[in-house]
Image (cartoon, rainbow, N blue to C red; front, side):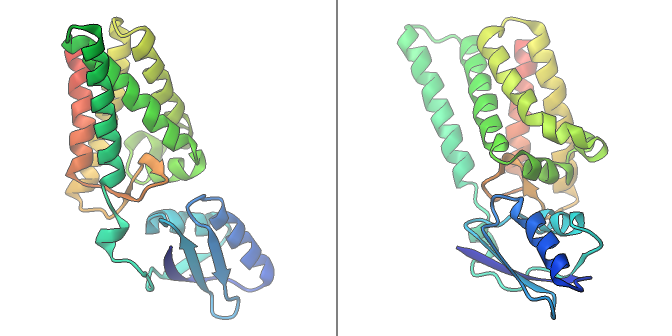
Length: 234
């Protein structure tokens, strides 16, 4: 269990406390909230708490409240809090499953393998995003160019991914499927590259907010690979 302490300015009554607690509990990763009305100190607990930017947005969405002091009491170090392990396991499962599909057919076709890989990627990743769509949308807005300007895009993105996954299962021979994928992945890639270059310490939302994945060059490779595969099949 991970614990973090923050100090919130603007709390004047128990109604303020209730509003902030409600906003924080809207994120499934935050399992327990304890707020001291007099000092404004709040203790958050969860298996893997969201990034500071997300918690700040949640607090500010409750009303005219601001975070004075950011995370000051974490039981785990930054390296242990943020891990690529979930992403690597999923990628290995996808790779193994798609290779087994090709093996069972008796013939390895690179086009079929890429289509199945894309389908699996989009369907599985959309599933994790849909576990908490509002939290994902908030995290995605912190670095995606389109989501930052149009909030609805963050809410629609999990369904866009699911649609693309189904399209690769049913219509992988259609150029429009690859074109839409290329556009979506290019826009996402630009936002990721900008965040990495600026060294922004934000949470990668590729697996939603269930896992605390750090934004880094691994995310660039992931999005870039999807973009290249879509262009090769176009």
